[in-house]
Amino acid sequence: MKNALPCIACGRELRNVSDDSDTNQPYCGTAFVSHGHYGSTIFDPMNGHYLELNVCDLCLALHYERIMIGRDSKPIIEDGAVVGAEPVQWRLVPWHPTRNTLNHVTVTALEHFQLYDDELANEDYNKD
Image (cartoon, rainbow, N blue to C red; front, side, top):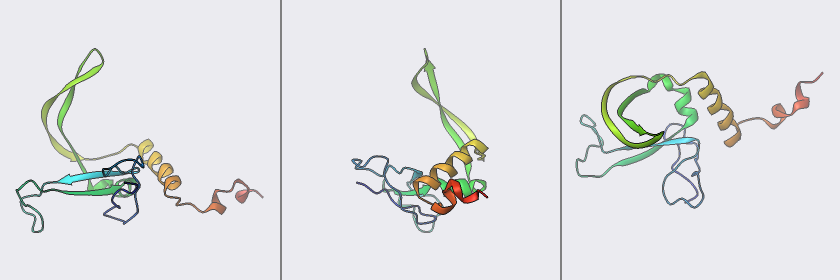
């Protein structure tokens, strides 16, 4: 499976991390799964079915102020290795990716999705 699902927000085509992947494993994107939600008027089957969708990293970076982050487990580490996970119930808080993370996403996405003008990328362009 060469292509992952496209970004649900912008429609950008996403490729899988590996061409021999037989699952949705997007590069420059994140996959999300939902078994439904009480209150949804479109999807809450309560029978084991789920939806899977992708959001590209650029859309996550551009709209981080709309995202909350939580935690439902933390790793148990022994002798420097993760040996399990401890359940926790941390409340949702606003997500604030670091400036370095946002810069990395921008540079990686510009290159991967070829979102730059070759003329502007030319080193001679800005020389007098």
